[in-house]
Length: 308
Ligand code: GLY
Image 1 (cartoon, rainbow, N blue to C red):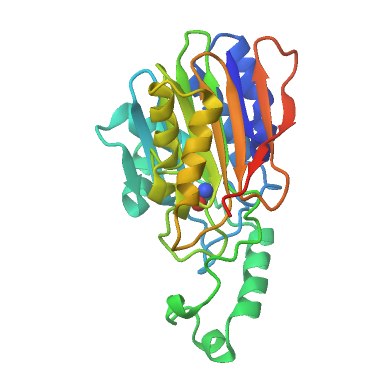
Image 2 (cartoon, rainbow, N blue to C red):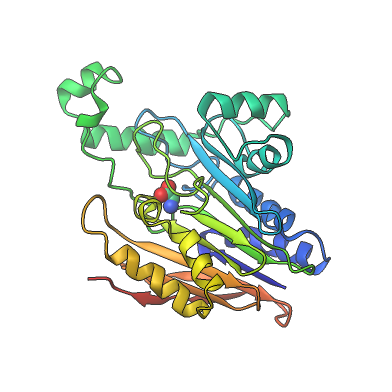
């Protein structure tokens, strides 16, 4: 058994470990762990009280993948619900689709009686107002929100870019490998922007035969490189876990245009091995891991790789 989570998601790890130890389904274990991250108001990049988009709205993204069936469920830009990761799971269970976004995702959430929530808090609105006061011109302030948002030059400047997203990977007692993600995406993002967290193959991928991968930070890069799927494909081709992750990291380094920044790649394989690589990390990256031979989850430091 194995659980790997990014450090931002540490508050949900004990719950997920408890469920894995009780031999429960690994996908359900990581969903229950992530739900605790989504409702933690001290975390400003996942779930409620995250920093909102440029209009002050919290649009959340999440995905799950069951590596036995390779079925996935994802929601993007969903507003007004407490647990996007649970809605993603229900989508996988109840619909023939893999992803729903915006109003469609919200309608589905209402139909399944997902827990509604006002995710914007005093803290998130205060931070958003402060940001607007710094980036808008006097003219833009006068007309806001009826301005051309593309003229607001702040979309790629995320104060929480080092902490964004939570990702969990698990290998359970029945050798099922699962992945799950949840995020508010970039602070102050353009409305409707999706990162990699709801994009299976980019921000996460799981295949019980080989392994799983999930990424944090710059979704604009992992979408273009198909990073999570690439790592699992390299595992299928027989690469060691470290070589599989490094190969995908080199592909991120080959990107020359567009928005380029940091990415952290988290991976596990079917042998119960794990590896985390901080690509172009400006700060040390930590993660949390537990396996059947550890009494408690352990916090470790990721290896670092610079592509330039
Ligand atoms: N990695 C999260 C995002 O780009 O939204």
